Length: 154
Image 1: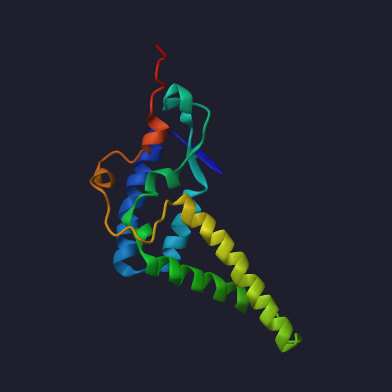
Image 2: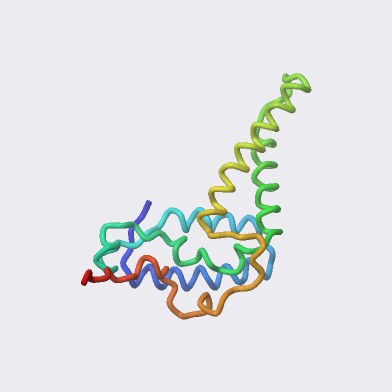
């Protein structure tokens, strides 16, 4: 994992948004999966956030999680298909019985589905969601929860 400044975070988030629009236009599933990995690797140092958020890591996924590309059911379906195929193709099952091959493929599918469900949750995906909210079009890419100021008790 790699840390960056607030300015670097904002610039990289804006760049990733532009990349995601192109990914969506090109229907490039493998590029989308790479952006997911990248977004879960880099984070901002949180000293510039509100008092209650200081010390927390703000990963790039927070800045891109509401991008409309993540609401595309076809992206998630193709992504899981690509991941499963890559994993199955990488297995040496030549000497396995048909039953063992089926069990291995089943284990791969369930393992990938579990990991992918986790990614879908991280990127706030709801497959019934059909259009971006007006809030998602705002210039600021910082998640509102990371920027909330601590309320004073009366």
